[in-house]
Length: 198
Length: 152
Image (tube, rainbow over all chains, first blue to last red):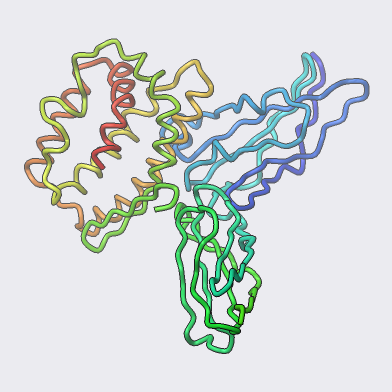
């Protein structure tokens, strides 16, 4: 029969802010288009469904070397992930991600934040990072760090009103994200300060 | 709560459940799954009485039993020919498994008291389930998931 294709190598998952992408090195065969198919296996499949694997149709017979797993990795349990190469009639063995992937390990970046002094009003605009994200905003009058105040933002709307500032005073703000599903927070953003009018 | 996470307190036991992810997964397949259930006159969860009749003090017990029920007796018998449906079922099943693990901790810390009412109710659910063949019973139970989610 036809010689087997080499299995994809360097399989890894890039997970940032609860978005998960499986990537691998391309398999190159002179004069042929190599396609790839990806499957996943959650803890449930391993323990209750005969270790079955589930294909992802958006990542079946694709030519790119990346697959967005975000929609399928939607539980905080360990997942196995695998990919194989195919050309016409020939197929490779499955290449499997070394070790499990659990979304609890996703990398959380500090939120993008913009603060505005609108007259005497201290406002903040936060990046909409999706429904899984809450925000913890800390703000204080410069020099009075001991009187730091906090606002928890559970759903992003437009601009958030933080405080009414005293004339001519400077206020500072920093923020971090919190993801309830994995019970983890990001680092704080860089502190930003603005001065009230007057 | 953001992303619909719900915090359940059973005594000092605290369980966070990302309900929106489960609801979103179920909403995506509800019509398809319920469409596969030919027996409209029978209910697994609501016959003869609704879950709402259960005292709140016994809620933890029933939730614990029902999560075990869905993990052990429902999801794995619901494999379909549709890959998209199977992916969504996997998503819900793995979320249930994750929550079940937390519920077991509550149960082991004696926070999940089972009285006669919840014990009888769960017996009835099993009787309803066994009254059908496995695939029909599993598919019907999956189709009734919103009854459980709404009650929770």
